Length: 108
Image (cartoon, rainbow, N blue to C red; front, side):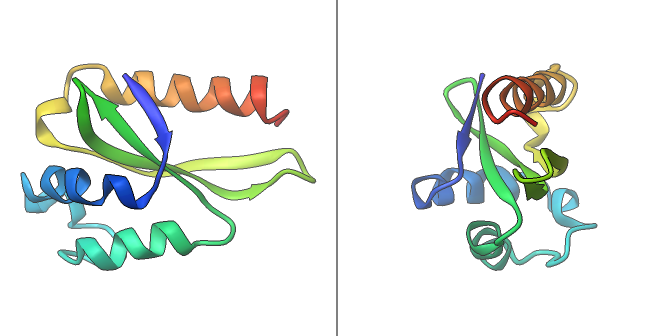
């Protein structure tokens, strides 16, 4: 299990993960518009987006929202995972990795 800074190299794998079930994006800002969501994730100035890599392949995404190093704070959100990762503990491990990174490496 890894959480990697989101980059263009993740687009194809995350598109495949998102396509497994339309319910994944049902409550997102752009329902059914993966590429619009992906482009927004790369461009959002106050967010830090990540790809979740589980079982050797892209399994979903998550973000630090409203990241403000000056105030030493961030929110965690916009998390989604492909259905094959549901119920596996991948979400819990993802959050642990994000919290560890925030507290131990970013000084939040």
